[in-house]
Length: 101
Image 1 (cartoon, rainbow, N blue to C red):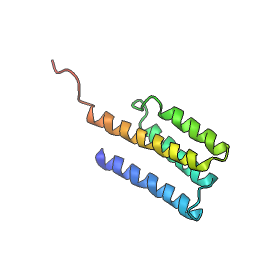
Image 2 (cartoon, one colour):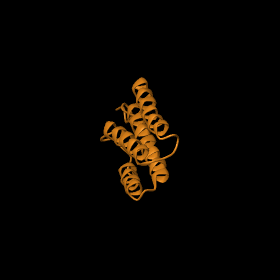
Image 3 (cartoon, one colour):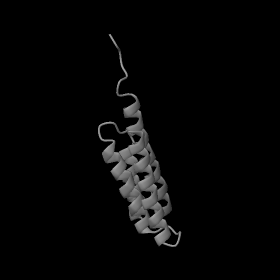
Image 4 (cartoon, rainbow, N blue to C red):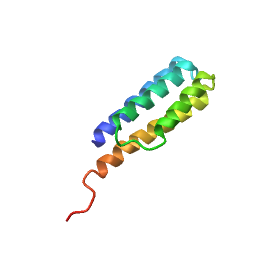
């Protein structure tokens, strides 16, 4: 599972890096879209185990991207992606937790 999380993280950052590199290092709508897509993908993988506000953060990032505030949208999307990845890790670590009667 740790290898899966690492692979997801690396691929998501690679996609984001590709989007930023293609725009000459500036943030544009495609960079924000890529960051939001990566966050949504991570949230989907964390389904059932996601943290409370992750979906709300993604929605706010989408709103900011629509308003042209791409840098803020990317930062929020990255935050949401990180939360989703941490939720996956938390679920894996705690899958056997609980009382042992």
